[in-house]
Image (cartoon, rainbow, N blue to C red; front, side):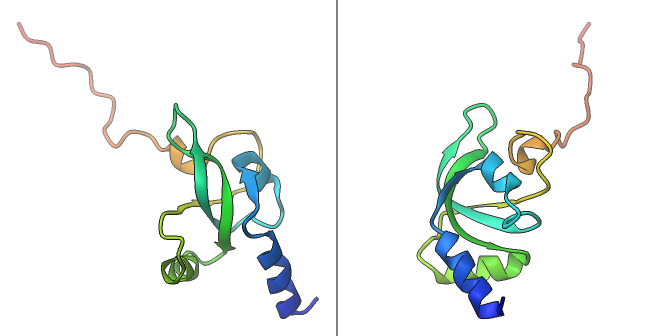
Amino acid sequence: MSERQEEEEVDTRMGRRMTWPEIRQSDEYRGRWVALDNCRYDARTAQPMEGTIIDADEDLVQLCTRIRQSDNKHCAILFCEEADDESPPPSSQRGSVYPNVPPHQTH
C-alpha cells in the first residue's frame, strides 16, 4: 500500500466516535497520540472515556501543529498504549506529587 493510500485510509476513519477501550484495542492507534473532541468524561477520574477521533500521530509535535492549524482547538490528546485491560487513560494513573505525610498533630 502506498503512503498516499495509507493517508486516505486513516482520513476516512477520523471523525469516528469511539470509546477509550476501543481505541486502545485498535492496531491503528496503538503507539500513537490520539486527539479526541466532544469527549464524554469519567465522573470519578475526569478523564476522557469516549470521543470523536480528530487526528492521530506517532509524533506529538506534528499532531499538535495540525490541531493548532485546524478548527479543533479544544481536544483531549492521549497516548494510546497497548491494551491489557479496560483501564482509563494513562494520565489518570498519575500519583500525587506529594509523598504520603502523616497529619500534623498538635499538643
